[in-house]
Amino acid sequence: MTGIGFTEPIAGPDVGPRRRRVDRGALCWLADRGSDTWDWIAKRQLDAWGVLVFSLWMTARVLEWAMDFADGHAEMDGLRMAAIIGTVMGPWVTMQAALVKFHFEARKGTFSTEGK
Image 1 (tube, rainbow, N blue to C red):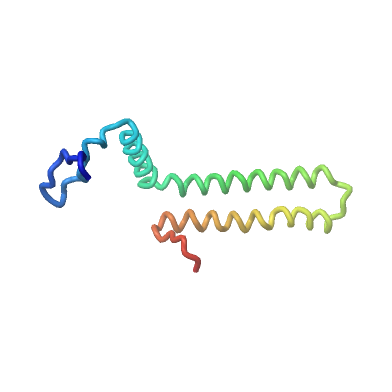
Image 2: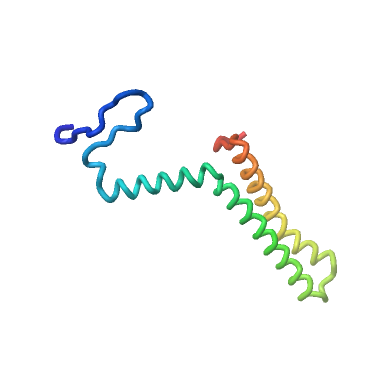
């Protein structure tokens, strides 16, 4: 690593990461701001809250569709209508359960990407 010198000496374990002279460019500044922004988002768990709000909003949209479908097809018998609405709602309810589980596991800090 010739030509790259460190500008901050290491004084102890609680000193931040050492910075190279070339780490003062616009891309490094942008990367630092992006990292700081993500740390701010992660500390407040805004991603988990966003997933929960999206899940609830989509549930309202699916229920709105189901009510509009039932209202617009009054001539259809009840069993057939229930089968169609159940076919649409079933996968969404499964997805919503996964999203809510993600939210609560993320809030507890036990979120893992490994299958159990």
